[in-house]
Length: 464
View (cartoon, rainbow, N blue to C red):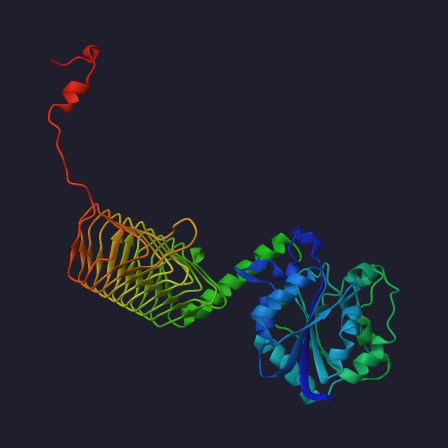
């Protein structure tokens, strides 16, 4: 049964030889997301009835990525990569479910959702059998030229174009919307009589025009949107364009960058009201920054939630963690693996916190490692404190109650629990639970041996 609306078929089977990488091209990272993330994100819209991705080179790992990141998308495996037309033929069964289908390359990360929605809307409004996107770059080298014919259009790949045809500056984007029935009919007729020996999807355009079908061309006003990624140089160019677009969007909404040329913000990041970011900051993944917060220089945030009025003092690394409102972190602090720092809490200089909860108003000021631990509200962790959480086989928890005072250089040998308002003496090794309100002293009594230095000296070392 044919579904109303437009399905989206994303072509992501190529190896990407010019990228010189063992990673399939569509999984190479761009702003810390796979290249494939971007066309998937741009087509994640109610305007489209379903999505499928044609995979080929590295199909196993590309399929795993799609399963985790985009579970609603179907996967079609193209065992042999014999061109764009062959990719659509491979997906014939899926394509036939829809009245219309949009075909888009998997390596055009700059194309916007708005452009694709506009292409689809105009295609449907005009009742076209095919609508395709073209653009006019300053240098058309490498692109297929879109030529006028007495019956419509013909697209000629550069390797097959004659010299006078190469002078045409109107080029093909590789983005199309087809009415499904005529598309599938034309796919039966295309051949491999070209320099690549491949089935070109562009030949469908020529066939439709020759049969008098209604084919429309839409010019994309921003050529950058169609910029492909075929080698590391193009990857760098696209990365810079994308970085600037993302920053501009956030700054238009109130973000303040002390030096925007050194700030990197990923496409999935959300930024609240009146946020300030200092130079050389990176924010990646599904991170969010709450209103009125400030991120100090050289901080790196990945997949983390930062509350309102939070200050990262600089050189802070947050990884898969949460920092609640009014907290202070840094400098030189590493917070990772599901840690939560409570409201108004402080994690300071040369502190690492792993898979732990730091309660509201608690303090871990400096030179400490807190792992697999819970620190209660208002507790203070002295300098040099370590939760000794690994016994050689497994990680063990440390539980510190509310209002506790942990003396400097305390070793908390997990599993261990300290009740509310418990204290430890500086330099203690704590191996047993500490009752609430108790002081734990886990060190030997100091003994001074008078004259020890004089007695241990050899006669030829001087002295009295």
